[in-house]
Structures are given as structure tokens and as C-alpha cells.
Length: 383
Image (cartoon, rainbow, N blue to C red; front, side, top):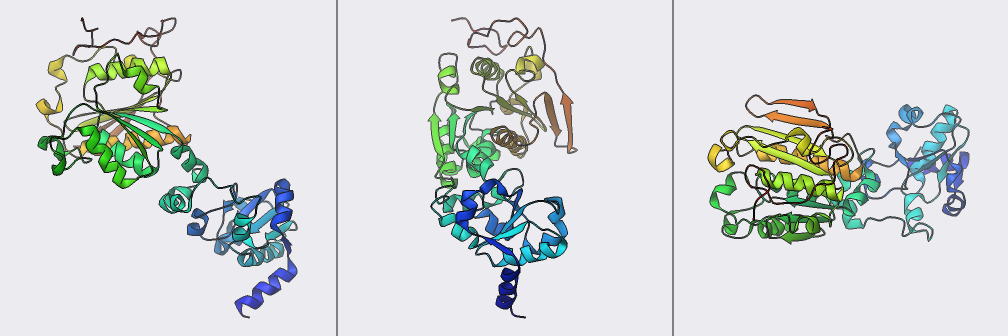
């Protein structure tokens, strides 16, 4: 039997629902099933539909709908869904229907024509996100509507900026007052030899703009200090700590507590790195874990101690992952946990952390911290 004849026979045996009928009672169906292929689903889908390609329908439908469920199937134009409905009827599903005209007609119906928040170009760009179970279009829209401040456009800030821009974060702020140097290029992959001598924030902005021109990039060519921290931080949903010094980390921590903005922390040292998430009101803050910085001789910077060039890429990618999880509300972020990584043996550990009741910044009964600039020992700097 030819395909067209098989489709015609199926349609004669099943119930077809028009887009108008579906629009009048969209909640009638317990389960809506998209029987197209993953790439078609990624290009556009009815909200709430589960993807079960036609070839997998009979073997996996029980994972999504019981035989007593009311099920609506759809495909591109209504042919595959008709054959799928016929197959389900033969399996004992009594309340199953096919959407006449399929997604193509649904998408152009006046009731749904403006339903999608993503353009065709965005659907193509973020197609691999859209087919992720539990992420989908809703998650991508959250990323597009979100904003992230990256403090530091160096080793850690480079992969974070690249991946967050590629992922579709709508607004990215870059804070850095330094200029690109040749010695940076061993690890700071957002820059290149043509940018030597240019401000790092401007260089990073130019690179991520080439990756995703739709990203709104805000350049803060300055150091984060007590006088400007709140004004800068308050304009963003989330903060990435990609710094390389303790005074800025403690300042960021205090600004986070005052604004309620979570901080995704990362740090690197020679062959080792660590990452965590500090979310005000939910778990410890940075000061809970590190009430005081180590002595300078135990914490030299990269210029003094060296750093494996690929290490910032690993830790920065973890930071970008944590930021996406927080923005989308997906997965289990590193709140109350400190992830440590050793590149020499590829060992990774996650340590449980807890809030310190006596913490100077977030301890019980403590007043909100006052922003001050710190010296290298993280004592308030005297003016």
C-alpha cells in the first residue's frame, strides 16, 4: 500500500480535530504528543507537547500516557499523526485524536500565530537547547531575558563570556580595567594578538559580539570598588566572580548580600581550581567559607606562581554551567557545596559547606555589611 493510501485509510478510522476545535478547548487533552523528528520539534512546537517520534510511538507511549488518557497527536501537516492515532487505537487507546493540518496550520492560526517568543533565527541558533528535556523553549526564553555581570575579563572570564553569549544570555556586563598583554594569551582565550594594548573589557566585548550579535553587551572599563559596586551590580540578575584577588572577592560578597544577587565563584591556582555558588539567604556566603584571606606568601597570583593555561577553561566552563542552571531554574546548583579540581590527576571533589552563624557578613543578627574598599589583607582600606 502506498503511503498516501495508508494515510487516507488511517484518517478514515481515527478522529481528526481542527485547530479551531483545539483552540476552543485546549485543556481537553491530558497529553499532547509531537510525533515529528527532534530537529522539527526544535524548530517550533506546541507548548507542553512531549516529543515522541512516530517510529518510537508504540514502544514508548506508555511512558507518557495511560490507555485511559485523552491524547492528541500532531505532526507537520497531519499525516504522520493520523497514522500514529490509528496505531494507538489498535493498542487500546480509545480517546486519541490527530490534529488536522498539524503544527503548520496551528502555527499560522490567529489564536497561536504570535504564541512563540523565539524568532526563526533564534530557533535555529538554539536548536540543541530546545530539544533538551526540561529546558526547551521556556528555558531559552529565560536566558534571553536574563542578565549576567562578569567581573574580570581574564582567564576565568573568557570561557564564561564566550559560553554565556553563545547560550543566549540577553545582557552581559564586563568589568575590567586592565589591558591585554602578550602573557595573557596563554589562557585568556577571549583576546588575541591584534588586541594587545587594548582594554580587556572592550576586547572581550568585541569577541562575544562576533559570537552572538543579539547579546546586549555592557562594558564597564573600571575596577569594581565600594563607590561603584552597588550601582553596577544592581543592573544584573547574577554575578560571576572571575577575579584574581581577594579584595574584590570580599567586596563582591558584600555587594551580593546587599543586593540579593547570587554570585558564581571560581578561582584557580597553579594546577588546581574551585567553584561554588553563593546565594544570599540560601546557604553560606564567601566569608562563611573564607573569613580571612590566606597570607600573601601562601596565595601568590598567577604572575608569581604560574597557572596551567587550560585550567581557567575548565573552571570557567563550570561557572558558566552554574550560571545557566541558576537563570533557567534547571538542575542542582553548587549552593552549599564547594567543587575542587586538580588537573594533575583529574580528581574532582565536592565538599559540603554550611552557613556560619557568626559570619561577619551574613551571620544571624548581624547588620547588613557596609561596602568598603579592602587592602591586600582584606582589612578596610584607610583613606
